[in-house]
Image (cartoon, rainbow, N blue to C red; front, side, top):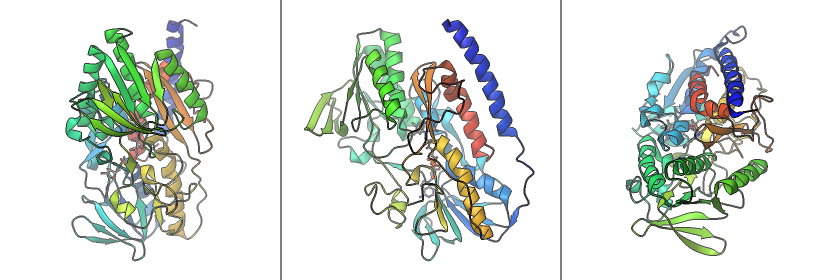
Length: 438
Ligand SMILES: Cc1cc2nc3c(=O)[nH]c(=O)nc-3n(C[C@H](O)[C@H](O)[C@H](O)COP(=O)(O)OP(=O)(O)OC[C@H]3O[C@@H](n4cnc5c(N)ncnc54)[C@H](O)[C@@H]3O)c2cc1C
């Protein structure tokens, strides 16, 4: 098939998919069951992807519930867009909207942070000094980026001295592009890192590497850039078959992997990055350095007694059953999204599959019965490999590939259609999810 025919076929398939996807999105749910009457007090921590999607579904299932959502942030961030901002493909505004634009009528928003959780007295204390009692608690505050864990690094450096840090938010993603675009034009040594902790969208460090290599090669030509990727362990991705595919792509593109290299310190003046490795500390000079710091549950969660005691002890993810997302010690608490202590699932695409599971078990608990839905670890990553090409990688807890469109989108092929899924369709699907409709 020529590239042109391939694109035409892909375009047809894509339009079919979008039509199908929209049909699914817009479909009225099967004969809406009568709402469950309840006076339950439901408190939700976090109005990000997970909290917002869940609250929009709960208001259609429950009648009389007293739902309170806590979030200090006036701004909702579409984080998958940050990778595009940091490659100069979208403006920072592409990722921003108002938190209140997505929340339904009939609930209470407290624009404060949860400051403490007492799972025994069943109360949440807010940063403004309120105490909010609950019958059921939904924990969805995402995660925090521990930039301080990297010696010599501070967010003030982003965009200067050849330093990028796209995870830090829209403004920093735009500054990352300033530093990265200077590197694409001038050439030199680029080093791309990822942390040794669990992280959201583990494909994003790879996407940034591939995009900057592609843009650099197009603008300055081959041979002017030396590209290095520092992996935290002996793999390039958590799913072995995907890791091998990325290794082959790196080989084709001249990107050198450095296994078990974890960024420890930065000296911006000398442009030296220090890595912890099994053989001791290793220094590498750079012209462009992309920093992704360690990631942990927010402090309030780590102090709450809700975290796993014997796993991820430096990270504090919430101790939930991996199938139901219900707390293993406090059955009136659920956690979902990035903060959940499950082996996979720190993506917005995972949230889409986690939300109906929590909804099911929560409504069942209110009715005094058991829920039946199961989360299987579904995680998805449109892994961009060039401007205009991506691989739509989807997998579960057992590292099985779980393609949503078998026969149309091959997971390990670099396709234009998969790029469109990321560049166009993902935001529409994400927004539908926020509204509780996907
Ligand atoms: C660079 C990047 C690229 C990504 N790419 C993709 C992708 O291609 N595909 C994909 O599916 N996913 C992607 N993701 C991941 C996705 O954005 C997250 O997994 C998703 O947003 C998680 O939802 P969440 O609700 O758990 O957390 P968030 O969406 O981060 O929301 C957490 C909310 O909790 C609030 N909060 C925090 N602390 C408190 C507190 N103490 N009290 C009250 N509220 C609090 C915050 O203000 C925030 O509004 C990407 C992420 C990044 C950073």
